Image 1 (cartoon, each protein chain N blue to C red):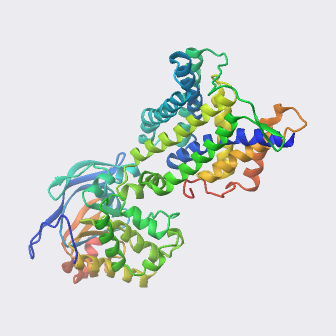
Image 2 (image 1 turned 180 degrees about the vertical axis):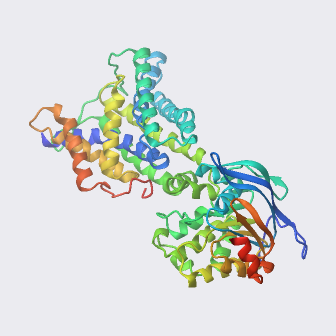
Length: 292
Length: 255
């Protein structure tokens, strides 16, 4: 039983980690809570579902298209909502409110277009689960774990080694200094939104494969993602990964013997404990994307 | 030994590098710089001096394209770099034209290493060979930086940080370098050292330098020309030597 709960925790944790990584990259560059990140999770899931259901597209192709669409949607949100607000020097509270607004609008559009009933997204024929230390893990779940770890490593490599990644880190560290070495900060912010939103898109598809597609699916994803990013240490990619796994593990193993309705309460309890005793998170960042 | 890709001046002649024409700039309804006109020559160090609140920093921000980031705007006038209008361009666009600023407070990438800061300085230098030349030149000018390269920039002393900030700016091999208050937070002995480096820079390279400085006597030792601001207006534009030897005039300009 405990091993099965652990496996379930790791699976859930991986999807939280992907949302958290995207959230943390965006937060690091623009310094406000991009809550509409959750809407992008849902849009990616619906896009993949629609391409498969309406056009009969194979899963892999639908998944790739919806990840790119998720990235694009993030860039559009930044370009047409956040950037005008930034240029007016709006405080981050205003940006947060705008972000909430966008989250609700997108969620309602999804409900209007696709209805509020639950859709199923399936990547292939349902396969027999594999046995692992007494727990059952399906092939889909193995894919979820593998793609999360690979994407975490890839995101870290991108931020550390590529020119675009370095410019994101420089803008995160000091926007004025970045512009004085010749970095176009608006273009860099767009890049961060694309990268972060594409990660949210991957999370959306993985959540859809593991459970279902429904309009409000983004809410749980973004809240758990934010908690994971905070307890990992805001701005840290390895922190987001560990934070996601920790939350997934805590809420699945923590409900052992009690009702699974307590999952959210456990996540929040872990968050509160971190905020009280280690506010910088596991990697002890000062809420900035520097130690990626 | 020093290679420059845009050297266009002949030996001995003085060429105008930057022309500032009736420039006004400020924040909201407050005009911090009013109708200021002056020129900067190639190979000269220009000291931008004046009491607190005279508009020195605002002027430097306007010239470097960073004023918008601080919530300000250029309201009137033109700035010409090599006869090309540049007023209103963003800082990153000006870097491509060979102009950059060492901002006040230095603004290093504090969580990156010294090496990474220098590399970020040369971010726009795509040519590997040119990058190497610029890098070696910076380490020749600031040999003290070389052994510090693996350390985080935030862990350096004030003097070391100032040298790194200037070194980072030099990684683009600028034709015009603006430096805002290099003395801020520095011990007097280190200040001499930093100013000496700035003078060396001018002697070894054909570069224009503008230094904003509170420490007037120190900066006049190395400056070729002076622009003094008073309440946003130009109170003196001219030769540094004239002010250096004329305390009465300096007082009049400054008070």
